[in-house]
Length: 264
Length: 322
Ligand SMILES: Nc1ncnc2c1ncn2[C@@H]1O[C@H](COP(=O)(O)OP(=O)(O)OP(=O)(O)O)[C@@H](O)[C@H]1O
Ligand SMILES: [Mg+2]
Image (cartoon, rainbow over the protein chains, first blue to last red):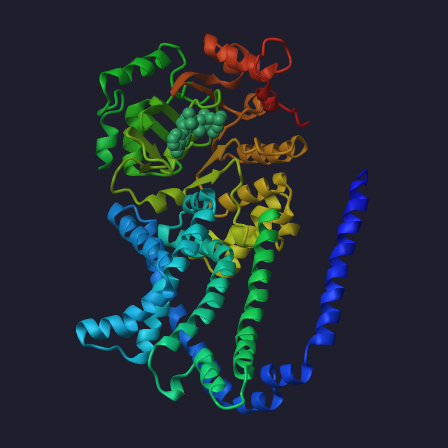
């Protein structure tokens, strides 16, 4: 009843540790570790995933991600500039685009490109082009917003100081404003690559040949062979982490850097 | 093109009837533009010498403003400004907050576009739509209240960037000029640091060196010491004194009355978007003719006496540096 704040905090922490210990003991005692390991992380099955998981699946995931990012960045730059344009219709178009593609599921876009368009027009893009467009048009919407925010975060005094020194508009943008905006934009752009890496799993929906499998599809095919259990999906998951965790650290690194520049 | 600016010297061409109102109240004051210690410059000959764009002969007009109007939407910020600055002259622009001092300065190098009136700066007709804006700005240095140094570049690069990219100077020469100007402001040993590593006063001195590095004929200062800690104000002001002594043409918006009194050839007092009074520094600050000028000066000069109801203005008290 009459506990001090510190006593109450200590009690609460004690309870949390107790729960943890109980759960751990229960896991150790009750779980059948042999079966679990064999079904979830079976070393033999894991070895079977190689080398295809790397030479085909990981490679294709990277290819799809890069394709999506290249289109997303190019389109994103155009959209960001449209959004900042002094011509109002450009701003409207850009806003409409961005709101649309940020608001609909990426799955829908994949279905539209992979099945909708072929059914409606009897015409099918090359597999890689389909993936590039499906990933790129959605990424562009997010990237455009990051770029716009980055450009607007550079104080107007920077542009004015550059122009006052006799720099042209383009020169001031290229040497003064954009380098500063890039610093601001690097963390969100890195995060966008992480999202793209994971979204590239949507390629799973499209019909494709074995040599076009990416990590998710590869893992899905892996678990259908007899006795494979969950292991192929676990290996695919680890492969995603190999890409996304370093990118996350990189993004954090950029973030700390910009914070330091801003603070000082 | 340039003749159009030369002809309507006495009365602004496109002005409405209201224009002449405030403009006349200025001249009625007895302190005609250019009536400082320098020989008075009649408008006519100046216009022709400007058209011929001769350099270095006699007192040239560095800045010439006639009937300048600027509004933001409904808000009329500048209501018919006439102003002349002769080459080599130091003019201080004083006035209460919101009187349009910054706006006037920013119109001179077209950071703001005026709605009416004519401006010529250093032989460029600024209000000419065919003006080469960048060429004009190269001749006009600007120092901002917030310094606006480029944070992603070193102190040295801040001073070389425009030289290399705009004037196309070779890197070695740009570096030499930049270091000379940094030495002039006493900061050559900070050349390799980032602006963020410097104090406010040091940053403002770098900003002055940066502006000087493109060899301007005219320097505009917009409250260069207002964002500084009191103990660093003196350093910046003494740099500006040195510049003035070296014959730089300077137009300085400031609340530092001791600087204005000691350094300025002429003081211009603005209020409500018009020039209320101007003349030699000692006359305007020592014995102001207009009630508005007197009220303003008493608030700025004696911020602690009961006469000042507004507390925030105390920060503008002159801090006599030495
Ligand atoms: N970009 C802008 N848009 C709208 N109004 C503006 C803009 N810039 C300035 N103003 C207004 O114009 C008026 C004059 O501003 P200005 O900055 O020229 O005054 P000032 O004399 O420099 O004042 P201070 O001593 O506070 O710097 C103010 O009322 C201000 O709010
Ligand atoms: Mg101002």
